[in-house]
Amino acid sequence: MRVLVGGGTGFIGTALTQLLKARGHEVTLISRKPGPDRITWDELTTSGLPRCDAAVNLAGENILNPLRRWNAAFQKEVLSSRLETTQTLAGAIAKAPQPPQAWVLVTGVAYYQPSLTAEYDEDSPGGDFDFFSNLVTKWEAAARLPGDSTRQVVVRSGVVLGRGGGAIGHMLLPFRLGLGGPIGSGHQFFPWIHIRDLAGILAHALETSHVQGILNGVAPTSSTTNAEFARALGAALGRPAFIPLPSAVVQAVFGQERAVMLLEGQKVVPRRTLAAGYQYSFPELGAALKEVIA
Ligand SMILES: NC(=O)c1ccc[n+]([C@@H]2O[C@H](COP(=O)([O-])OP(=O)(O)OC[C@H]3O[C@@H](n4cnc5c(N)ncnc54)[C@H](OP(=O)(O)O)[C@@H]3O)[C@@H](O)[C@H]2O)c1
Image (cartoon, rainbow, N blue to C red; front, side, top):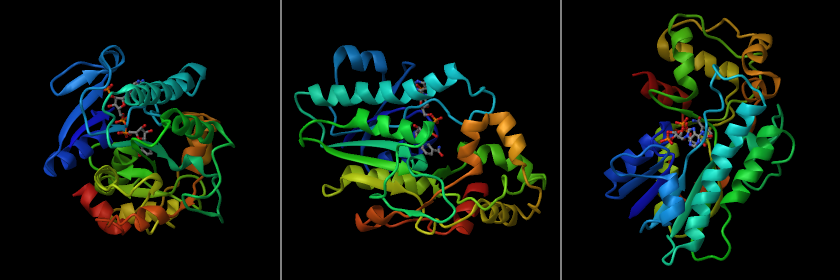
């Protein structure tokens, strides 16, 4: 297949591109910057969809950048970088004389309300209680195409664990120094997925003609709490991981509204992902972490 990947230059896009190429597909990225094997968002707007069999969107300003203050300007960038790219790509697909077979968007499990007791699958309600859940609702709506000439899939991802990026990129140094530990109370759920599995679910969704609708992009053993995650990361590194990161510090760095992403969590199960026939490479946290830190 020829696959067009919006935001494919990033953390998840690099892993997805590698996997798709290894499976014999051709990949063209959509980026803000021109380059080889790329088109820009402006070119997509002016020239329309290039010939492709499938499209994915991964573009979005990094929400958990600790160097950016959580103010109105940053919130607007977080929103518009996702909604505008998704609208542009969906619009180009809708207008294409030969529409692609599949269109896949990655959003997040922030759709589901944080809880210490609830368990969410893809049919659970959500999407209407805070900034991030509203963002996911608008983002998924921006992707929706009229008609059924293109198969539509949304993967709601948990925290992606992989080498050289993502949340774990910020955690490794303190944990390696033995200064790591749970965030806040540590009781909150920590829905995670290994990057190879997220790329695998995306490739499975692109290649499998019966897959459509929402898929949760989390590991099947995702009842991990933040404290369990901290212990497992400490164990994988052979370091103690007892020093908690106080809620007040997280709130001071990230702002109260954004800090919820770290201080609270959801128990999410990938019921439809498993039913769609996806087989995980890293279902267990210990093995996933060993691969990431190797
Ligand atoms: N990583 C995770 O744990 C995780 C979890 C759940 C959901 N997600 C979602 O999955 C998607 C991909 O995540 P990722 O970790 O791969 O992201 P990433 O590496 O931070 O960024 C992906 C790409 O988005 C583009 N981008 C960044 N800021 C932009 C802006 N202001 N306007 C337009 N494009 C912009 C960049 O491409 P160019 O510079 O080439 O334009 C970048 O390479 C994101 O939408 C993210 O919200 C990620």
